[in-house]
Image (cartoon, helix red, strand yellow):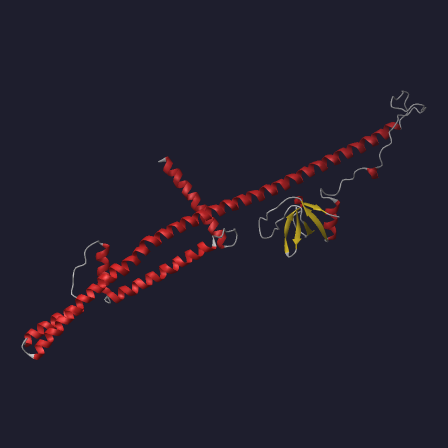
Length: 330
């Protein structure tokens, strides 16, 4: 029981995955693996063969049995696997009628004899019609029906299996692509957070250094009677020796953001720059641009765009590209 429940759950998950993949393909939101062109041609010819085979069968049945009520009766007998009762056809009925009337008028009369001969001929025509119908059913309709109910059903089953396997493959490929894009974005976000941490730490140490330099200057202004071991030799000053502080202008002034000066310049001027691609990147949507490692593209800054992205252009292709995958060139 538990095994059946798990199997049903797995089948439901597979069906849902295929349905989502099929729907996204119809709306152009997912890639579709194209089948071999020769196979597609064969499948198209198979559908065409089925269509015309069914049409020919239907018209042949109308020819062999024009009466729709009789055709329906024969179909029901066939479905119930029962033998169709023998009945006289129109030629045989006409022949019986002519023979009976000929005997009534008298076989010795010219008219009665003629009626009997015509009736016998009509019965022969009726027998020939039955043989024709039986031969057509065995040698023509039965093979066609076997194709529809046998070969074509097998082809349809295999085609459905192939379609399901293709949907499974494309669904797996799309999940892998989305996972790679998510990993790339996560890595870019983590790299930015690391840059923020390093910048904050550099700012902290720069502030600490400046505070200590200012404190040392203040302490040096007080008179002192003790000797300072750090005082340079030959100096007679009793004040505390204050090391020459690095001018504030030469301190590593942190930029207003974690971005490089070249990137800040690009954003402030709204111009374009050349950039070299550091890593391969697969576009996650139609608004993004796929990248190849070591290629050179043109980038620009667009107002209101996320700070992790720039607008990239390669020839006529244009789309968003992640900053962490680029190196701006001078």
